[in-house]
Amino acid sequence: MKLSWLDITNLDEAKAAIVQEALHHRLDAVVAADPADLAGLPPTVGKVLFPRGRPLPDDFGEATVVIVDPAFHRVTPAELALAHPEREFGRFVEIIDAPTLEDACEAARTERWSLLLFRDPTKIPLEIVIAASTGSPGSLITVAQDVEEASIIFGVLELGSDGVMMAPRKVGDAAALRAVVETETPDLGLVELEVVSTEHVGMGERACVDTCTYFRKDEGILVGSHSKGMVLCVSETHPLPYMPTRPFRVNAGAIHSYTLAKDGRTNYLSELRAGSKIIAADVEGRTRLVTVGRVKIETRPLISVNAVAPDGREANLILQDDWHVRVLGPGGAVLNSTELKPGDKVLGYLPTEDRHVGYPLDEFCLES
Image (cartoon, rainbow, N blue to C red; front, top):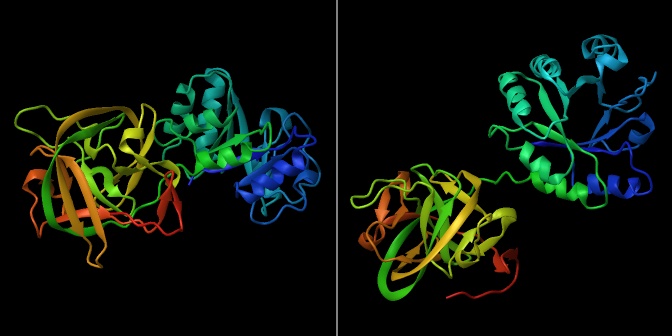
């Protein structure tokens, strides 16, 4: 999980409300320049003292981490750690040129905490620091100007910074920052479903979902006619005799079908647009968030596949009636839709919640 630090140094009248919001949404740390602003905070949140441009106080108060700027404070984290072994210390580096970039790389390799402020908008210097810190036990915290930049920082070099520090401007910013941190998707408990019947159901519109990501051979998206039953549809990663592979695409199913999206929601395939975020899953249930590049909807013959779980729960998938459209079975077996027959096993996901406008909801809902 990435780390979220909230800098309250320059807050005035909204400070109390924003701190309460940060505590409610379980941000990892509150950052302040004055030890008094950290007093009384509960033990569930980290307390970071960062007196940037100010002398170090004689008493660090309740701070659990103290960040210093050696160029200004004339003391290093290592020297402070010897004098105060009960606390953790880190180094602040403002990156403006090649020498300060090297300072940041050195901090990333040696310090427990490195707080980095990049003055230029390019993320290339951050890429260099992340690469330099590979294998180091410390954590990189990068200053973000807003929530949008925080999301970009977390994706740099795929690894991203270990955390971000952001100064909120208003109530709501702390919640938004936490939402960015929680974009990591949980693993899913996939189950083996047994095909009980298939049926050619005539013409209809189906959706190919083109993403901005290459899928692995054992990976696809979960699609189903009902919110409580989905089947793992594989991407066009595996070779086909008459057309090139398109490992970024899933020929997913009829336009009414559900798929899993960000924040625990579902979306109809017909709702997806360029920029939409959906969940990719592999045969072990590992997931990641991928970005939709486009959705291609065309009229095609359709086939309906009915399957049942060992506990009797049912799933249905309607997809293009063509041999090259495939789903995944146990162990990553690739199964052609037109060759599915009763007794075949496919992998699926069986959520327990009903849905209202895509959100999970505990209410009575009968789907058929």
